[in-house]
Each structure stands twice: as C-alpha cells, then as structure tokens.
Length: 112
Image (tube, rainbow, N blue to C red):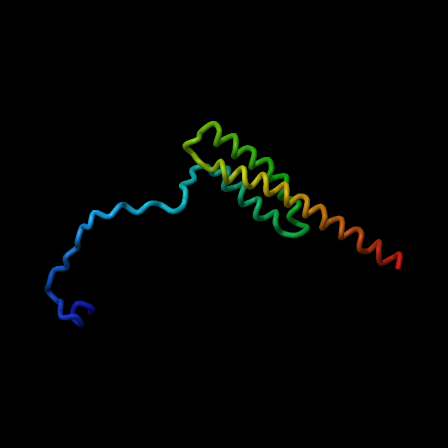
C-alpha cells in the first residue's frame, strides 16, 4: 500500500550499503544459569518479612555462581552473582530490622 501511495509500485527499492558497523548487543550474554537463579532469589528476597526465607538461598546460590564464573570465565555472570551476594547481605539487615519491629511494636504498646 505504501508503494501505491507514493507511486512506487513495480519499482525496485535501493538498499544502500553504507558500510555501517554491525549492531552490538547492549546486554551481556550470560551463559551462567546459576547467576540468573541467584538474581531471581535476590529479587524474591526483597518481599518484606517473607523474603527472609530467600536470603540464605541467595547467598548459597550466589557463591556457587561466582565459583562457576571462576571455573569458566567465558560463561559470564560473575558480576551478577557477586552483586546478588553483596546486595543480599544488605537485604538481610533490612529483613532482620523488620522482624525486630514486628516484635518490639506490640511490646511498646503494652507499656503505654
């Protein structure tokens, strides 16, 4: 329809080869499924109160992802595994604080 509208029906389209560079992939190819699982566990650990169940799992699988990366650097995923381990340490602090609040708030209500 576009060719008809622009009176180009039956004409060949010229495709110029400008010698442009090939498109590069913006995202790193990750062939390390262990690091992907560690990141998924980290995301699940962000759920308040319930997420504390996923923090130990994130730590174990994240360390395993770093070990896989050290054994096979071509697989990638080392940064993702390390980030999930470091961030899960922060999340465990927040989760413990939330559980402490869950305990201390009723205690403060009884004393007033």
